[in-house]
Image 1 (cartoon, rainbow, N blue to C red):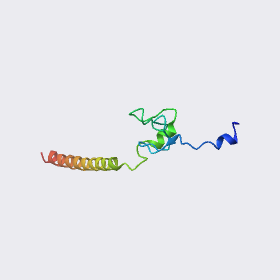
Image 2 (image 1 turned 90 degrees about the horizontal axis):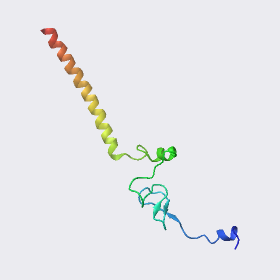
Image 3 (image 1 turned 180 degrees about the vertical axis):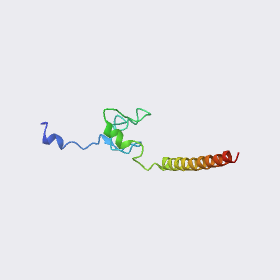
Image 4 (image 1 turned 135 degrees about the vertical axis):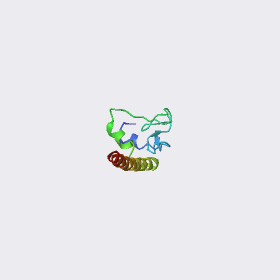
Length: 100
């Protein structure tokens, strides 16, 4: 057989399938390893500094953020409350100092 057109016709097996962890079509079936996230080998996600775009695609804020959304709202609410409370206390202290 030649290396060209005829050989390409014999390719009917799948090397990669869907990954359970990241959902990409990068899970090598024979090797049991995901090329995108490193699932099957490492507990930590595959991540390299030389690929900043890939990190940007997967980082916090690109998904739904079901929990973090709520946490952020709570934090901003607490900040507002603290600011109002502190300003009221400050005004009250000034009034008391003037009376004395």
